[in-house]
Length: 306
Ligand code: GDP
Image 1 (cartoon, rainbow, N blue to C red):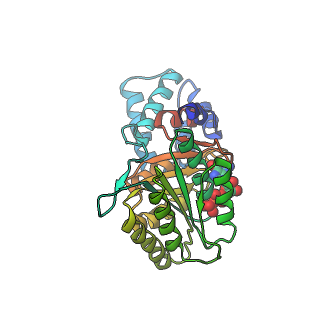
Image 2 (cartoon, protein in one colour):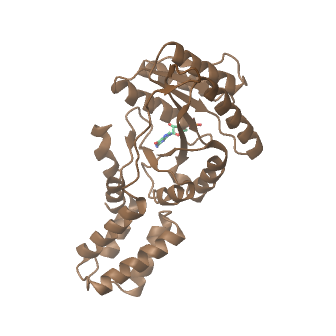
Image 3 (cartoon, rainbow, N blue to C red):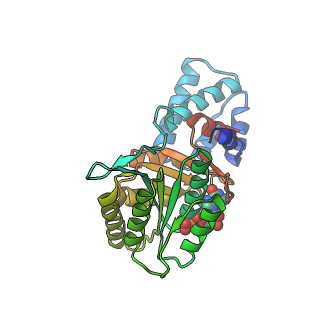
């Protein structure tokens, strides 16, 4: 993971260019302030946080008599970092658990989110990171809705060198597959079981039933270490709605923000963290196996301001 840290700062964005253009002016006019506000709104920072931030920035510029563009930019950076919150614990909980009989269990990580957001890819990339850290892993293909999902996960599994537990049948009970995966992981004494799920949002009651059942059967075998919600950074406000629904049905413990490569909309970080009260822990920066990085508030803001 550590060697990936620098990647985020290089994700680059038109937001940075726009902010930089405004902030390089010698004196900020009302139009400049409007443009700054608009730029933050376009980056999905959200109306409330953007309004607060602009007001605080204007106050500091006035009170401290800041003139030099670099000084204004430094204060903006400081405020954005505070908004993203560098104090949150963003580490993944991968501690082994214990079942009802006191026997040790793998750390079970359930990965949830709407189809197409990047769940399967994230599971594959995360498996690779864990294997590189010398942890043993089993994958569970509980996305039994999409025909190709189990194949896709299995491909990741063989690429990374970890087994995938799946059903041979399309439309099999996802909870049964999740249960099998955790059982298998437990029996073979692996460190981590990563469970991929389907995310059909058309029907909230259906989603709640499905995730509820998956969670219930898993926790009969092992406690859940993490429930990671995968959100596509390019979907803006829509991502926030998804966060709301999954937050209600799934007991989310961390967020993975995917597709941060090629979007200036990373400001959604601020909104989803506030909405769910849980931190963004990982970010997806591409489709390749090495394109997953731990989220870091300062690096992220530097990427925005680049
Ligand atoms: P799922 O339906 O949620 O399991 O989504 P998939 O894992 O199948 O991903 C959907 C598409 O998004 C695939 O084409 C992935 O390659 C792509 N994808 C996933 N994560 C990222 C990312 O971080 N960046 C980019 N650019 N594409 C991604």
